[in-house]
Length: 314
Image (cartoon, rainbow, N blue to C red; front, side):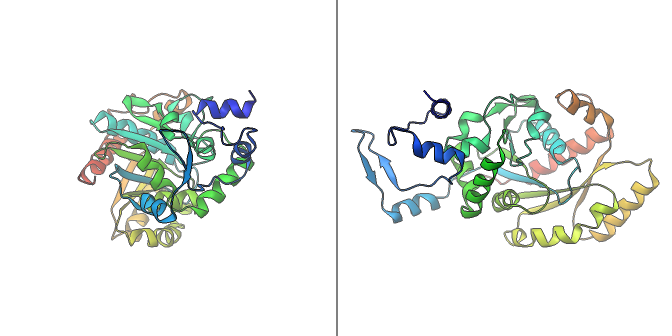
């Protein structure tokens, strides 16, 4: 068995329709996966091709899904992945059913949760057309995690081309997970405007825009407005989160006032700076284990309760 066939076997995939495995290799190493409509008869193993209208109706079926929270930022290095980790743990501790989903090809979220690096993530699973149920890992406080996983540059390009052509890709993948509609999915997105962010915004019920109290982040608020304008027409709830706020810094306080003036018509939430959060990342431990009695802990728990209050009601 070749290495590629072994990878397919890991996901429970058969290459019987292509005995030499050529198409399987093309799917994995560059060609965008596609659905040619071929289906397998469960009784006799024969193949048939479904009608285009049948496939369209199947794709357009609305399936109940959890509340989706997209955590986004224009600037990099603002603590977005750290916040996703803390919110996932905090919500789970409050009795919610949470899945953290990493849509960032940098694959940083796995470091925060300390999950298995050797297991495939959603990047390779998607290129293999494998079910995401096979790549779910356990996170802090009982939450679930789907990391992006390691991918090379060629695989990243293939997946990006695919997502550009399939705007409902993420919606279909979430539906296929059959998650509890009373739960929450917290999505970590790459910084800036990209196809992964657009996929997340297309399914988001709540958007958290993460910034820091500095001039660089303040200067990008116009970009945030332009980026979110199409999404907000669907009326998801949008909240600004000012991360790593330092009350002892006069400059930080001045920047916070500038943010409030600029965002006078929108809710602004603060997460105070706490060095123990950085220590948690260094040891891949739960960030809430050490900050539950602190300003940052209160801030995160308050934001968790807000998300619970803003959940869709089944």
